[in-house]
Amino acid sequence: MTRKIKITIDGTAYLVEVKDINADPIEMTVDGEKVSVTFGAEDTATPIQRIETKDVEVDEVSKDDLKVSETPKTVSAVGPIKDFTAPMPGMIISIAVKVGDQVVPGDEICVLEAMKMQQTLRAEWTGIVDEIHVETGQQIQGGDKILGLA
Image 1 (tube, rainbow, N blue to C red):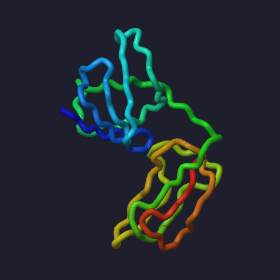
Image 2: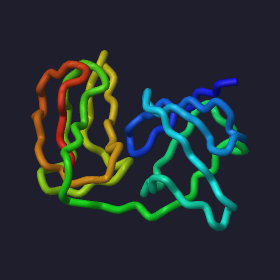
Image 3: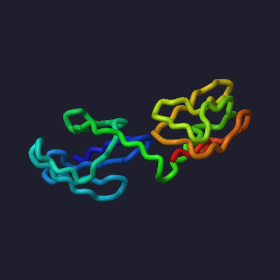
């Protein structure tokens, strides 16, 4: 039986399909790419890829099927820019950050008014505000860039 799991790491969602969680090696597909994972004894497991994050959300899987160990989160001021985008059309009511500010997941980015309701948009990743694409009072569409994090 193939089990589909949605894993979100630092705001990026991955679709993982696992055929047999008890197989060795475990054959899986991550966003369409085939991956084979082999585990040794729990104390001597050799990770194929190390994920340095604490912000991991898992949907449609029991905790018996998946173990995620906590590793320290790293912050880097150098790297690709991640664009923070609007989830829906609306008007920017306020902006809580400025270029150069460091944000962590959960920090307020801005307030968006949509359908006469105000929604506080919060950071999904750790980073430094590299650029701001909007200003207070501006009308935006869903998917429009609000800011970039480096």
